[in-house]
Amino acid sequence: MKKIMCLAMAAVLLLCISAFAEEEKKFDLGGRTVTIGSYNDLTPNENSYTYAEQCALIGEIEAKYNCHIEFVTTNDWHAWDAVIKTCAYSGEKPADIFCHTIDYILPAWATVGLLYPFDDLIDVNEDMWNREVGEYWACNGQHY
Image (tube, rainbow, N blue to C red; front, side):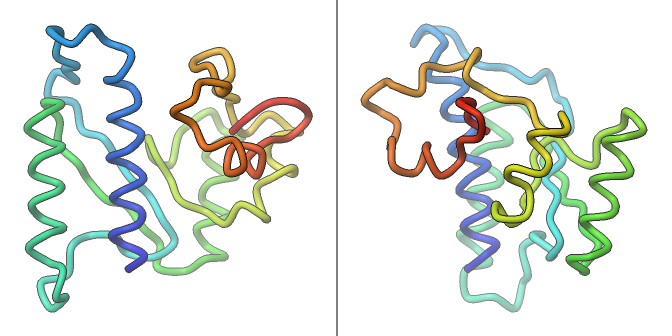
């Protein structure tokens, strides 16, 4: 279930990005590899009853946005936390999109600049956004 939720979040992120483009324009990542990271392995597991759906969703996203999705993991929450912080402080990125527990990253990461607020990128007051959820991701007047 966690894998599907993380994949769905990545799909929503990509769909939100494309929502700002004119309908006749296609959002094209130019074949870029998009990495999705987590402390648990999000790679579709062929033993899962949702394997076919996961693969189909990944294939749909890759085709629609002309990209390749790659998953990175440590399979250990504490190691993943260390990887993210080490990469961020060294100027590298652990992944393009990553999962972590919100109560651990907000406000700690936001206040030291490890997260980029998206308030300048989207209008969080638009009707399409769930304000209650958005406020859960807010810190010092910014949304993450």
